[in-house]
Length: 180
Picture (cartoon, rainbow, N blue to C red):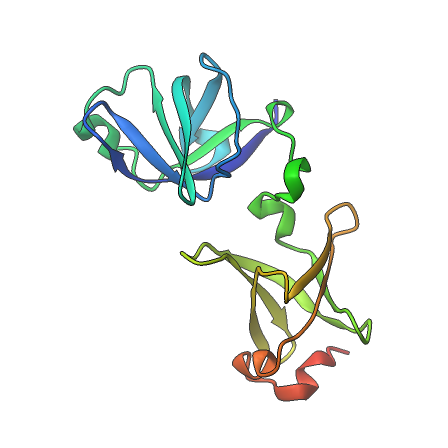
C-alpha cells in the first residue's frame, strides 16, 4: 500500500477540529470514510477516517474522526497528509504532485539545452515556483504559461521558456544554461 504525500497541515480551521492542508490540489476528491494518514512521513503516519473534504484557496479543508476541537487539531500542525496512491489520479487536469516534479530535467525550449534539475517547489500565493538547480546556482521558475511550456512526467522532463532576467536570478547569467 504505497502512500502519496498530498500536502501539509498548516493551520486549524473553525471550531470543529477541521484543518487547512496547503499544497493539496483543490480538485482532490476523496470519499467520506476513506482512510488518510497523518504524520511527519508516510512510514510513520497514523491512519484517520476522513469525515469531510472541501476545496479551499491553495489547498483543502478536511476533518477526521477523533479530532473535534481546535486544540486537538493544532497538534497536527506541520504534519503531512498521505493517501494510498491507488486513490489518486495524478494526471487529472494537468495537475502534478510535488514529488512528480522534483527530479525532472529542465530543458530550454528554443535551444533544447538542459538547464538543470527541479530540486524544490515553493508554494506561493500568486503561483507556485519550481526551483531548477544548475551548475551555477538555483533558478526560480514561476509556474505560469509564459515560462512552463510542456511537462512530461513520464519522462521526467519539463520544457521552459526563460524570460529575460530569469537566469540572472540564479547568479549564472546567460552562460548558466551550459551545465556540461
